[in-house]
Length: 78
Image (tube, rainbow, N blue to C red; front, side, top):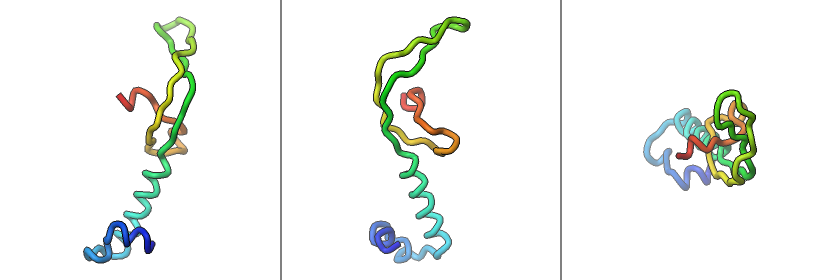
């Protein structure tokens, strides 16, 4: 809490304690959703065709919720 206040100075700007706690929780969630992923995706060219491994790729991304989105998606990063 001390480091958060030293960085953002919300108490010094007059924000009440509940709003400061909310800001800390929001920042924690954003930072917790950042991840680095590396590997191949399965790619399906047309409906009914068999999916094949795509090119090897790396992805540094943030997801909105780790429990619902355990990995990033390349199309979100376009």
